[in-house]
Image (cartoon, rainbow, N blue to C red; front, side, top):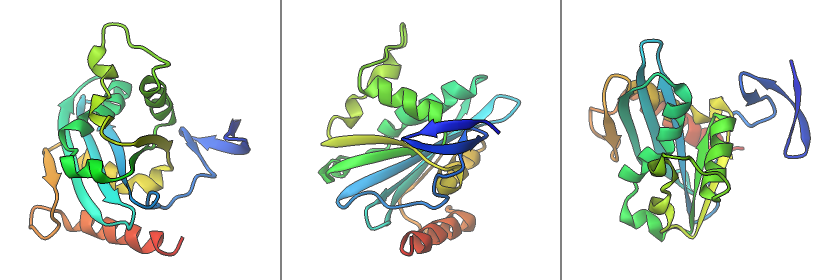
Length: 192
């Protein structure tokens, strides 16, 4: 295993994952919301993009998934950030900020650079349009452990078959496994 430096601490990498990252989901700062995002791509180019919104008390705000077809997993991972603009509601801008988390370090670093205008895609202006985030006072991008991103992963994999948008958990269309994973995250986040 290769050793790497990450934010001043020495850690070990395994499949683009730093072993020292917390395996548990943590709520955002008070009066913030968090969006966990993920993408999934099969060998037949069948893909899905997923995300889950929660607020600082861990309360579920919504989940989405978009079916897509693509050959490049990095492009699908990048599209997951920009797909969020379809699901951000006006009332979400009342929060102090948004934290966007994903489990692909390279993509999260790239998106942060694009957002900070330190990187420009030539010929891909739609990949630079972060105007949908302008309504937030602050925007943070974080790389997280794959285990703490289970709900977004679930949505991305589910979306390989069906588009989804869930903002209420009481309906039959929300799979029981999703609700179970959400409860597990909520219980763990209250004790960590």
